[in-house]
Length: 153
Image (cartoon, rainbow, N blue to C red; front, side, top):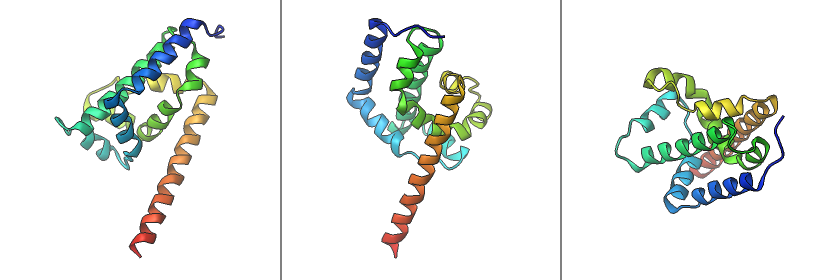
């Protein structure tokens, strides 16, 4: 059972929020919001596009959420307070989760998304939150495709 959040927990959450507001991080987050992998190959192509800003964005955003999840997993920040504020982590992981196992194996990165996965899988509620996020993203993709088809007609 987690303890009550402390003022230090709140301070850490606010510092994490400030990091998300940094200009390059905003660009990286914006890119990742629009990145819609449909296969492991899409993720691998991005991860292997060395020297591109898009590959740097992937590393920056995934690294940020790995750090933020690790703070929770290691007990440095209150779990419930963090989960109240980590909606974007679920959003990003929902895109990547179908390809994580293959990514780890084929890219030789056994720890990729390890901390995020551990946090997401730490409760049934979090697992359901992930599934709901994936369903929402699938619906968004469907609407985008319909809108694109309507424009092309």
